[in-house]
Image (tube, rainbow, N blue to C red):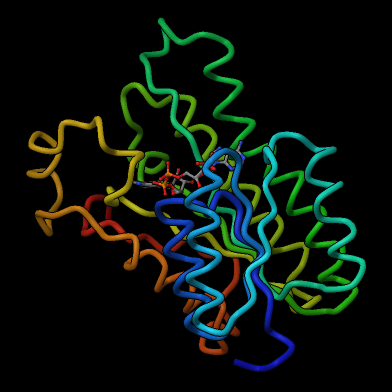
Length: 243
Ligand code: NAP
């Protein structure tokens, strides 16, 4: 990796796909700014693992929906370093059918996925513009392409993330800042542990769920020189679940 491409900030990276992205990017030579909210033990273990590989890992625990907390954590860091990449991975689900959905379940999902993108992408794009380089990658979901019963909040948030990313890609392309989306299908993390996989599996043409490493590898590609002419795109990693 080129030396000026050295830092990537990842939101929600203490577990699951975000942790795999952190491992993968550290393996590719990036230093990691690692955000999480509550899972301190796993974040600290991941930091130690990354540092064993000879990369730096800075833990930045804050709730991504808290604009003041995000600014307080990031602004001092951004005054001395401008990350090459911002990977917006953070996510939660509050699944229930819409007639039963409470307002707080709707708001929590929209805020964690989408409002936090506004908060974080605004911070990172400002400093990336000053350097005229950067990559912003969001993690969406197959749910916003297919729709998913019980996930009106989640699908709406992820569809919003795609629309926001495509618009931001147009705003930033001339500044050499590329904005793309990776859209996973079912991936083996805590997020899907309560789903009826036996019922879902026959719907997946490849007949298996994906691994966190299979998503992380696509993020690494989008941060590489090989992706220098790719912006405003959505790349699916879903075993053919949605074509
Ligand atoms: P996960 O295992 O549940 O991990 C979620 C991560 O987000 C954790 O590190 C968690 O940190 C963090 N987080 C949650 N709320 C936060 C907040 N308010 N502020 C900061 N961090 C917060 O989820 P995953 O399966 O890896 O999902 C990662 C992304 O992929 C999400 O955007 C998800 O929607 C998307 N996705 C997942 C799948 C799938 O099948 N797994 C499919 C499609 C898309 P703490 O534990 O520290 O709170």
